[in-house]
Amino acid sequence: MFQNHKKVQILFGDKGYSLNIKSNWQPTVIRKPKMPLIQSSDKAVLDAFSSPINSPPLTNLAQKANSACILVCDITRPVPNGLFIENLVKNLIEANIKKEKILILIATGLHRLSSKKEIIQIINSKYVLENINIAIHNAKEDNNHRLIGITSKGNKISLDKRFLDAELKIATGLVEPHFMAGFSGGRKVIAPGIAHEKTIRTFHSARYMEDPMAKNCNLKNNPLHEDQLEIIKMIGGAYAINCVIDEDRKLSYINFGEIIKSHICAVDFINSYVEVKTNSTFDTIVTSSAGAPLDSTFYQTVKGIVSPLTILNKGGDLIIFSECKEGIGSNDFKKSQRRLNADGKEKFILDILKKQYADIDEWQTQKEIEALKRANIYLYTTGISKEEQNLTAVNITKEPELVIEESIKRHNNNNIAIIPEGPYVVPRRI
Image (cartoon, rainbow, N blue to C red; front, side, top):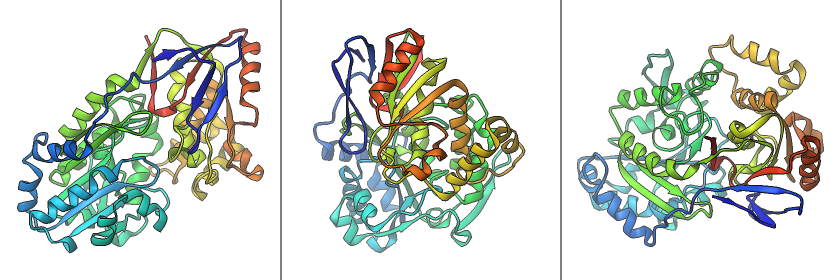
């Protein structure tokens, strides 16, 4: 959990970054406790299917269905689909669902569409790629969505009708901390994963984002989670495969079952690992965007910036490592960041609070502003062009060790926190 080192490997892209610890630094390295590992993933998967949580076994469910839709996350999440997707599909076929009646739908939310190369990486099964239809959700295609109801908060819910029309609905995903929805996985793969653009823009509007309960590792009174629970009721229920992985991307936990109960079981498992308690706060924090694939864009990097704010002293320095091999992110996010630079933090927030529908991706700018109000942010990256570096609204550095050294001198405090896994670890002050 808390360790001292001469070098610390920070998650950065595919290869990592070896951070040299100077002799005058007093580092606290904040890591998850060592997680148990599943020795036989095939056995664990089949056991999950035969002994599900709050549902009949998978075979029984499949025998009563003529069609199935399986949701998988896009390339931004390191879900170990290769460990379970083939077993899942074969179980459905053996239970007499015809393979042409099985659809795998990539839940992109409002992320960009997946490339052919990424689809191969996502599915990670030759058998599935060759035998099963695979489609990509596109939130902007009106004809592929159906209005199913309005939540108690007034959010009109439209979802991809290919999922709605399937007799057996299965979401698959990774359960990890999420800085808005509390935890990813389960119900979040459905909404916003396969929701219409306007539904997502309401989900991520300022009135949701400004709610103090919309935060990491919190489901209680979380407005996003509450809407997600209502959505599950609207669709008549669904099922889920929930995975938990360790810092090295190895499988630590997997379950299957009714989507809400099974997700809560996965949350209960991971929560004892990802929330790491400390009795200290820091003037200097070093963190990451969790390496590839999450650190492909600055948009995703904001998650790593926000996660450790609870232990960063106001006016402190946060140094984040993120490759950003795809640059800033979408054109919508770039537009939002330009508005931040032009209008400033206060006007940006005042303007978005007036909207019913958030402009696409401006919610990430809103979250970044939380950090900018509290800290000086420094980004070490190799993927953002000089022309676009100003769109980050943070300080760019090529010498992170020097920035750390200067921060220590500025604050006259050589105690620093280092969080190698970034947003996948959530430090909590006790």
